[in-house]
Each structure stands twice: as C-alpha cells, then as structure tokens.
Length: 485
Image (cartoon, rainbow, N blue to C red; front, top):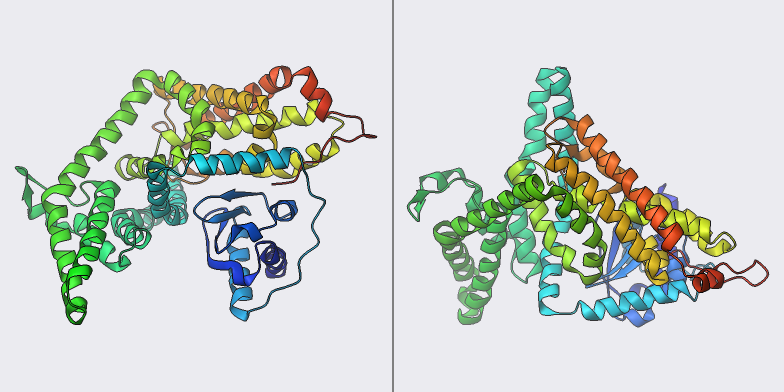
C-alpha cells in the first residue's frame, strides 16, 4: 500500500474515533493500530468497522483497530502526521452499517471486556504489553535463523552462515534488557532503570557470583528473571522517590534502584526465575512427548475461548521463555490450529448462507486475513455471533491441534522460532528436529485437518433449521447485513 493510500485510511479513521482532540496516544503492534482515547463513546463503531481497510476492532486497555501486517505501520505513521499537523479531515463516507451479527459481535466484545476487568486479567494484559513490542524483532531474528539453518543444511555459503549467527542471536542474547525497559515503562517506572537492573542478569560477570551454593550463569532465569527484576526496580524507584527530598532525588533514587534491584536479582530472583523457566521448558517437553495428542486436542480447542477470557495473555512470556531456552516454542503451532478451524468454519458458513450476499461478502473480505492468522473479523463478525459455528470452529481447532500434538508425541515435533504470526504466515518460522521441510509438513497437515473438520462440523451441525432460514432469506427480503468488523 502506498503512502497516499495509507494517508487516505488514516484520514478515514480519524473522524470516526472522535477526531484529533479525542486521541491521547498512538502506537501499533504487528497488525493493530492501538489508540488511547479520552472518550470511547465518540467512536462510530459501525462506520469504522465498515471501512474496507479495517479488518476488525478490539476494545481493551487501548482501542485497537486491526489493519493487518504491513499496512498498520504505514497508517500509524500517517495518522501521527495528521495529528502533528492538527488536521482533522472531514468524515469519510462509510458503507451501509450492519445491525444484526455485527451488533451481536459488539455486544459480546463489550460483555467480554467487563468480564475481563479483573485484577488478574488486567495484570496479564499489562505483562503482555511488555512483550508485544518485541514481536517484530522476534519475527525478524527467527526468519534469519531459519535462513541460516537452511543454508547450513544445504552446505551453502559457510561464511554467510557464520555471519548470520550474530545477526539472528544478538537480540535474544540481550532480550532481558528490552524486557526490563518495557516492564518499567508499562508499570510506571523509569524505563532505562528497569533495563539497567534487568541487564545484570545477562552480564558475563555474574558467572563469578555464587548464590544458594551454585555459581550463576549469564541469562539464568531468562525473561522471567528480567521481568521480576524490573518489577522490583519499579517498586524501589517509586518508594525511594516518595521518601527522598526532591533536591537529592536525581542522585539517590537511581542509585538505590540499581543497587538494591541488582543485588536482589543476583541473590534471589535469578535463581528462583531460573527454576521456574527450567520447569516451563521441562513441562512443555514432557507434555508433548507423553500426551501430545490429548494436549493438542485441548489446547487447539480451547484457545479461542481463552482469547475471549483474556487468559491467552499469560502464554506470551511462556512462548518467549521456550524460544530463549530451546530455540522455538512448540506450543504456538498447536494454538495456531484454532485459526484453521475458524477458516474452515467460515467457508462452510459461506456455502450454507448462499442467499445472504452481505454475509458472504464479509467472509470474502475477512478470509484472506484469517488464512494469515488474523481471526478477529471472523470471530466477532461471523462465528461467535452465530453461536454454533463458534463451537464447530473450536472443534476444528481441536482436531488440528491433535494432529500436530500427535506428530510431536511420535517424534515429529514442530516449533516456531518467533511468537506473533500464525496461519500461513508461520511457515517461514517453523523449526523441528527433522528440519524445516518435515516441520512444515506436520504443520501443513494440521492446518488441513483444522480446515476440514471446521468445515464439515459447521456445514452439517453449525445451524439449526430456524437459524438457517433466518439468515438465508431470499434476496427479495434480505437478512440483516454483516459489517466487515
């Protein structure tokens, strides 16, 4: 998409979120534009969801507009330029709004947001916010590592393979610093102090330090240790700032934070976090080796409900820990099967509602994003509001997860070298003990299984006779339209 098209999308979005005066912050992740809004009641949700470039919306701690990979960075940059210039373009003409399924999806999202407003779930979201900004680097380094592995297997360009090692591994060797920086930023501390305390855990000199009768190793505790160290640093900084006179704050607060935060990391947090991280790695390996089929069935089938409940946020640090320890996360390819069930389900809905041109048009626009692992438009715009199709989509995800899990149990485990994308976008990041081709075959088999079971389950069991008649009305009396949310 060109800069002109990015600007056009930004100009269309701006008035629909309440204008420049309503925007407090602008950021983006892999696929979503994240806006901090002063008053969410000013958002025209139906008109926003009807914009062709908008794949969906999610209301969380920020108002999130799903634009897809690639487009989101360009639109974010253009929106910032509009805000900097003070320009508030005239509202764009929106496509006709939908009232039925789109309205149900919006109500379900609102109800889920209320249910998710618990202290534990808010904490999980904040922890996820620490790791989400790291995803682009994880993806880039993961693809470079996959390229290096492919060249090494082919015995091509050994000099280049050697050079690609630092390129792919440099970020992971210092990821603790970035985790510490983002943790302090998210929880109200000074980011660089969080990074400074977390950097203690990866410093080579910690090998000379003895704690609990053992010498520490650089990086012990991984991202868990960095997260805990930075959280402690935030608390130390906030406490010190309250009790120290303002005239001494600039000297005393940083010193106390780094000194006591660093010592606590060395003589407690690194050891504890190391035990936790090791347990996570052992648990994932054991689960896949001894109960892969059942584990895949459960994880693949429950991932979409976990997303609705906000509990999937807890998996991001686990994925990152596994990548840091083992080079890949074996959980992500299994969880990605939930998207495959969703795609197969949507295809069945498309065929079953053959007279509902609005629903079919929305599925046509949302399906490419679904194939790339961006499931919000299909979840909240199609399957979840319809009810039964959401269940059959979960069944498809369970079948795909069981396929991948069973392959892992038989010695054909497949992992992802980065966290973030799924669907077809995950293929370049796959890794396994038998090489990328074998891993891709297992993952592809899981996708096909998820597509097939999601499709067949929805086609034969996804609708009652009454629901099918309601949404499959003749063209002369069309069923309520569906917005592309």
